[in-house]
Length: 171
Image (cartoon, rainbow, N blue to C red):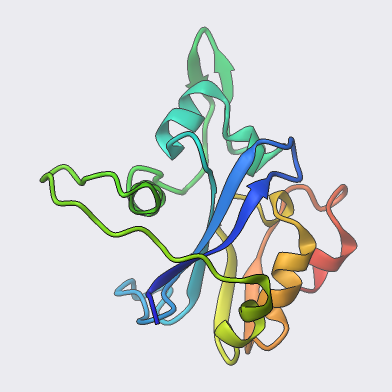
């Protein structure tokens, strides 16, 4: 099994822009002591790098009304307080998805795409983090229902809790 897989590609529930959700850590757990074997899910704009999305406000598609995303003033993002360093894992996941060469020029393979009917079995017995970057409310609920159907457990958070599907509350 690949260490990463595309679990959703389509419109953002938040604004209809193209997004992609990639799960990593399926083949082997992270070397990060805090997350270990927790499967990470990355909610990204499909057409814009995470860094560019923050700079031009396109991150609204994956972050929605999160107060930590900052705001665009005079062509710059100001007031950003999000703890995620998008220049690390989110950018690497996005580059791998697009097969963009790393700084050393070495190409990386992209991710395979899962069929919706495969999701439950792929995550069976695993612990899953919904939205290691990005808000789970940007993704259709059926994706998370499929992912979590046989999962051992999971965690996630949405700032869109008032507007998001009540089905997200259980995770």
